Amino acid sequence: MKNQGNISCTCGACAFVLNDCAPVMALLSACEDCRQASQWAAKRGGAAFIDIYYSVYCRSDFAEIVGRDNIHVTQIREDAKSTRIYCKTC
Image (cartoon, rainbow, N blue to C red):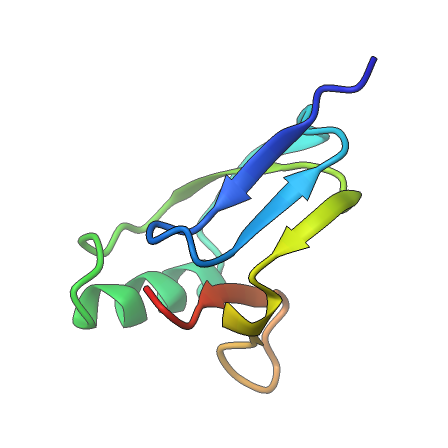
């Protein structure tokens, strides 16, 4: 039986319902993308900047995407290695 789970933003305007939320991998990241995203968020009232992130990755197997109009997908810069997903509302 699959372990279904939700990932949602702080305000609840958007969410992803995963068919299987069992972690595929976890790692510590100090890459330029993560550091730059943290600095950007901290300058706009987010959590204080940190150098190393603990990241958990699950399969991108969605049962449902809630609030698709509130989701913004972006890369921090042209040569970024990762894609970021933000809620437009919060």
